[in-house]
Amino acid sequence: MRKVLSCLLVVAMLLSFVPVATASETDSLIAIVGSNMTLGNELIQNFMIEVSSIDDPDAYTGIVTHAGQMTEVPLTKYNPKYYCISYGTAAKEMADEVSVYLVDAEGNVASDTFSRRIKDYAKTAIENTDNVSLQRLMVEMLNYGTEAQKHFKYNEENYANADLTEEQKALTSTSVSCENDRTGSENVLGSNLSLEERILLNIIFTDVDMDALDTMSADVSYEDYRGEAVSAQGRIERYSATACKVVVDQIVLADSRCDVTVTLYDAEGNILGECVDSVENYAARTYGSNVYALSEAVMKFADAAYSYLLGEESEVKFVASDDLDLVHTVPNGTIEKTVGDLFTAIEGIEIDAENVTVTYEADGVTVELTENAEDWTQSALTFSGVGTATFTITDNDFCIPTTATVTVTEPETVEKFEAVADLSFEHT
Image (tube, rainbow, N blue to C red; front, side, top):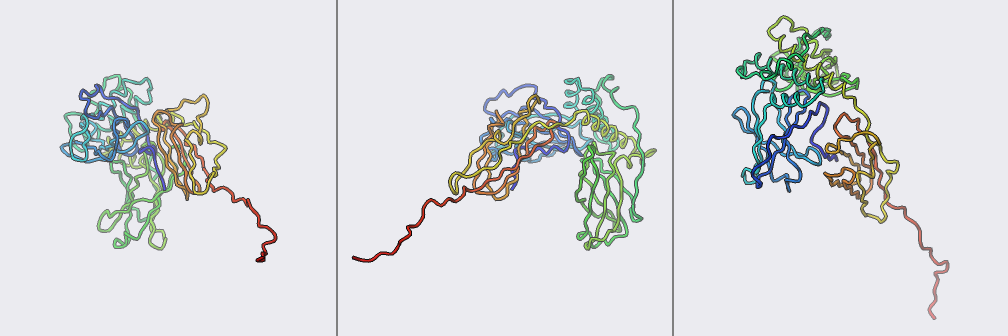
């Protein structure tokens, strides 16, 4: 069993919160108070609603309107202070306005409408920080969006980077160097990128049994931008009548120069083909083509992401308690603890208290966790039954997660009585 206090899995970059310009003027409506962005291999806007303004989150649904389409999006927990409505957009849509609001179970409008374009978010972020790496990241993102608009001939009268000043435009890299060192088996037909809604690396294999695609599997492995090993399964899809493709969707922006190994197997585990490729390799192969301007923009954006992330070194911010063995005081009872009993913040290190996230996996024991939005240390834990529960804590701000494993046992059985030696009785 796994419970998560935050809907955000930060394998990507969590960018700064930008509040709405004006507060709600209608007290009866729930306020959407601002937004931030998550950058992985897609662009996600997170629209925030304070937890204190909603009694029952299951009673509401987020409505997103974008490009003439209306989409229902569930309201999810972002952290102890906020719920969020998350919505992903394509690179070419950075200049599009996205509007969100809540409806209740009867379909009645329950909140203000909050509207924002990614280009406006980025412009505000650039102007509100002195961090040059972040400014460059935002500029390269908007340049990438602009090249996507040009390539796909989308909304070309309103480019994503049109509002940047000359000084801000000067933050972009003047050039980017890419090399192609792709290797693969003879049946590697080629590879390409999907650069619309997500950045996906596609490896194409031929000379395979097209009627057996459902029985095949594909391993994906690489070292990410931090040097950490990643292993995953690729998605196998039909590419043509005689070829299939393995879709790699695990890589994030900062991984664009990382070599990714894709191995295709049949049902018996025999290797059908293998390829080592990267986003950088693809960009190098497009040099001189009509795709290169877009590929170059992707790499500039990726390099800016890498520089920004490496400039924000992660650190350990919490330490686990030494006393994690819990014993019930009575059989079949419960044990009451707090998150602060399991973890303490390391002295002298700044904690982003509003974004502290706790997750756990329980084996045997039943765990109930009640959040405290004002003080993460006072989030309540209730243990019933016996077993183990492994907790992980982070503050989602370049924090290396800390884990603690709690063991819950029943009290030892103690003999408190002994039988009388002579238990023979005679009637008188």
